Image 1 (cartoon, rainbow, N blue to C red):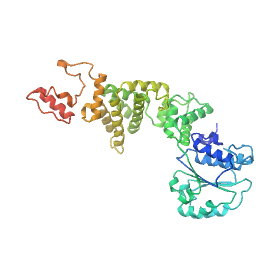
Image 2 (image 1 turned 45 degrees about the vertical axis):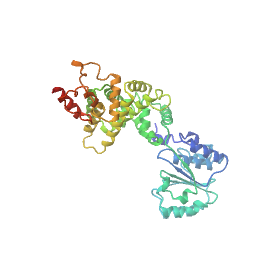
Image 3 (image 1 turned 180 degrees about the vertical axis):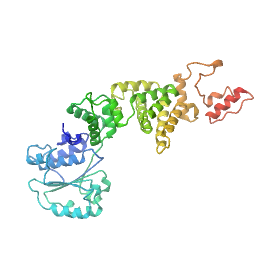
Image 4 (image 1 turned 120 degrees about the horizontal axis):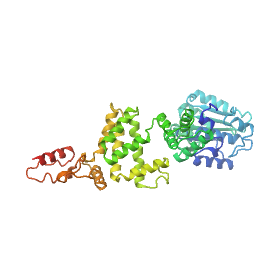
Length: 438
């Protein structure tokens, strides 16, 4: 097995192999067919989405003996030199502007640019990280970029196009690259795993796609790490969650079911398992927020999986559909809001476990708050019968039920009753207890 990194081993060699960038590759191919290629291009976009790779493919298309062509032949000397594992071409010069972005480097490039290509049709400069070129360096390049000789082409690649001075941008054709959609990236990773002949469990690829954040190179690096550590049974879900630091799905299922049933003991037991297992509390809260987001979508769109709104294996989708059915709409929305607020509060917290326990307590006790979303959550619980399955003596609610402000009217009706705080919450509950004792 080759030790070459996965993203280098499967680097695209034609525009047809570039995934998720059809809005860029299709116009470039049409320009090559029409022989209307510009003298300078600016490729911008997030890291790892194919900017430099597309620049190399464009250089390959321009210098192919059959070209300029949208599909390089792959057989001529130029195509072989610029192939995936080729030695490179003397007429295609790649410059890293992070270390060669000064005015002296620009002057040196300008002096060499007027010499014709050694054995190709064009001399092509690919300037990577172009935003690192200084203003003086860009100004030194301005004249040659504006009026280059016939044999000269420029391709600028950058993650921050706004830092490229306007006089250079105005002389280029700007193509913005985008992050690759999760579905497209997942299918591509599945093809790579199939070519590598290593089995991968269901649920692993969505984790890799999430870790990659839409970047093909980042996702391939993560996949490479998992494949390198795969045993005889391949890449397992448990291995992927442990290595990538994501929360195991069973913990998320347990805490969501605890929220749905109002089971505080189960919720805090999950918190203890998270801490004792060495998991990062902040990562657990982020994963919990992701799960609640999926439940909110499933509650609103039951066929969200078929429409591609949720990326998860079929068995996980089935479990989440059952979980979404146990929540009311307001209750689920309130839980997601509280977890989102808690995730923000956890930044720089001295005791992440305490913050996590407070988040669980807030979600479990809607009656402790008098705001509108808590009232709606209590109504959802009343409609579902949570904590009302059994009645205590004299028609009192079951144990574990914390009444809201509206629940104290009957107890406070007597002449000796203490006034109930209009804000509700614990103060109102204590006032009602004192009134009933009197």
